[in-house]
Image 1 (cartoon, rainbow, N blue to C red):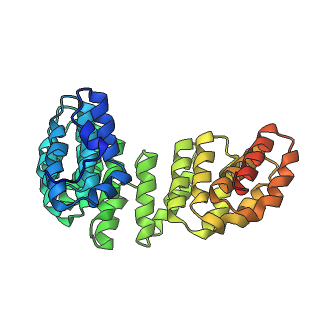
Image 2: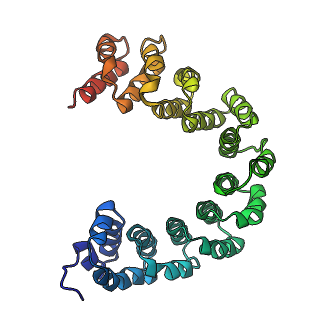
Amino acid sequence: MSSESCPKWYDELNHSDWEKRFLAAKKASSEHARIEWENFSEEKRKCMSAKVVSLLDDPHSRVRAQIASAIANLKIQEGKDALVAALADPNEWVRVQVTEALGQVGDPELAQVVAGHLQDEQESHVKATLVKILGCIGDEKMLPVLALYLEDPDSRVRANCVEALSRLKLGKAELKESMLKLVNDPSNRVRANIALVLVSIGEGKGREILEEMLISSDEYMRASALYALGELNCSDDCGRIIHFFDDESWLVRKNAVRAIVKHGKKAGQVLSGALKSQNFQARLCALDAFGSIRDVSIRTAVIELLDDEVGEVRSKAEELLDILNGY
């Protein structure tokens, strides 16, 4: 082997304790390890690759699952065939991680292989991941395969199928036709994904779906619609999102904060108004959002909340001031 010294995590891949091997594989999945790996010579990487890939046959499933992520992170080309073989691993969670790893490889030649395993897969969460990865690979020839899973009984599979189809290089008419089949799907996630796709191709039905979801009595529908508004990142939606800061559902309020944060400082004006809301939940949401955006221009308004009648608001204001002051 090259005279270059091996990183500590690599040496620990040989440890007799599976937890040590697992933690070593986890370290190999980090950005630091990837940069370290790239700085080694080609000869060194080739020598080390064999050991890394061999852990796809480790007796412990957690090690196998984590090493799949490491192979993708380190971009070990020699591991592609081994990952394909590992799609048949007896442990479903290993198959999920292996599928994710193949998605990072992104080789169009893998599409047929992934599709073949999809046909034989019985576990819904593995199927959902395989469907998602077919979209990431991006082979438009997979349209007939993916179309079959728009009607899968599992909502996770259908939702991922919508995302996958949106990634293929399909014409707008073809994509619209596929999406409109599911506009009345009972799943909140499926509907939100469909709305996002339709809005992205300029189809007005997408906005109609989101409006229907926002006024739904189902908190999951409202929460998913707010997620979609965050993804769309349209300034005109800021006021609509703020409206849900005082929603009765914690989940809806949480998604409203996440959605508004994606708009960054563009949402500053409507957020400042929420700091003065008569509803203390809305004030808390506004403080949470400003904590992520870190807009120092609202420091004075936050200081005023140190005298708020609600103790939770006062504490949150203290926390935000520390953030804004760099503590």
